[in-house]
Image (tube, rainbow, N blue to C red; front, side):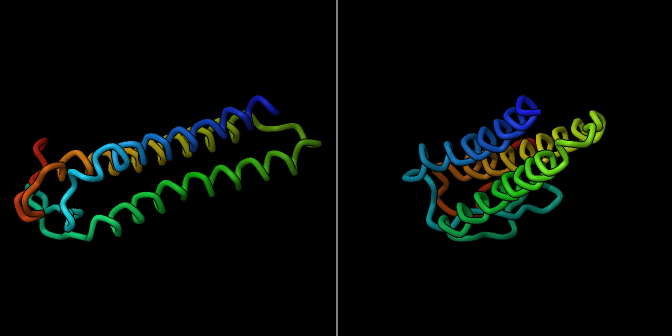
Length: 127
């Protein structure tokens, strides 16, 4: 059980580190107003200030940590009962997937906004 909890703890910590690292590295290269919403064609149609975009991104990443805490507490409280490996696998996978998606959105937001002169000129290049 300790191994499962340790593995589950690693995922959200890595997700938060992966989400925050680009913000720290390229903070000075990001515009004050950043594109944070795009239409279906990949054109920017909404923005937030740099600090609001960062706080939003970190708040979403913290959802993974809250999920992990719930998972860890549940596992610790039920340690006397035989643990269902399917249940543990599901929550571990769900936390990992959710965290990965949130980290990718955070990194992508920094990547497309880097060195932009205006948020209106920021397009998603993959579209």
